[in-house]
Image 1 (cartoon, rainbow, N blue to C red):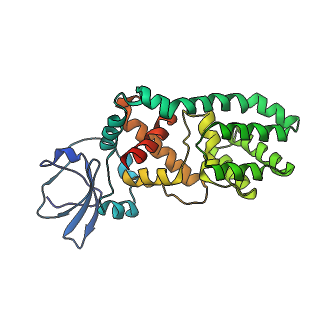
Image 2 (cartoon, rainbow, N blue to C red; image 1 turned 90 degrees about the vertical axis):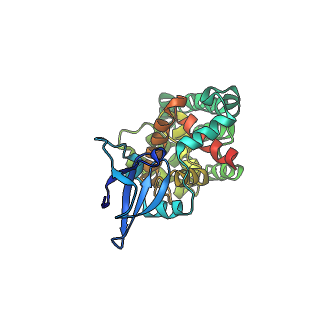
Image 3 (cartoon, rainbow, N blue to C red; image 1 turned 120 degrees about the vertical axis):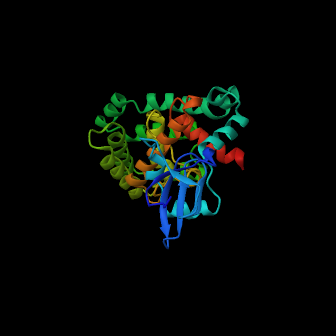
Length: 288
């Protein structure tokens, strides 16, 4: 079979590789193929063990989010499919997301953080404080919430505390935070405006930018630890278009990757993004 770019294929000799997609044709002789469970492989076009996939529908999320950079990384052997990561996770936590050790070590304190965030950053309460111009109280509540967990590093907590010393900064932060959490505009504009606010008071870190969304709405939004998030995305060959600059395009791709991971881990019955964030952190920590 002569391979064509963007063609879906299977390798009947290696069915465990799963579905593959022809990513590139090299000099009309070689084809680069990416398999969902095995990563990057190279085949001679006219002499290969592949056949066209007979599936009528393809789960295309992983293929749609590949990039040239992901393929280059995978050629170095960095790819690890989520099924293997799941096996490693279960070795550490045999009962998965219901494992008592997992709940005690990874989940309970984040659930407590969510409950505290729901109290301190409640929409009506926050709105009343803003109307009363009680920006110092809002800042105190924000710092109380950041001190609840160890998700932020000590230097990040210090930067936030220093950034919220001035009254003008407290007001700008509070109004932008309310708009981020409860505004009626599209999330893209709310998030980018929030990023601008953090930059103006010199606390524009991915951790700080995503901390409050994650704790208030853990069903939907992800907390971003840059090194961990990039490493797991690279390991999964999922292009998140990461940049150090906080921006909606990258965050939207991270949310897409998080949802993809949650779907792939359905057998473990993840409850929310707390479980997905904990899974990412755990596989990077314990696999090391």
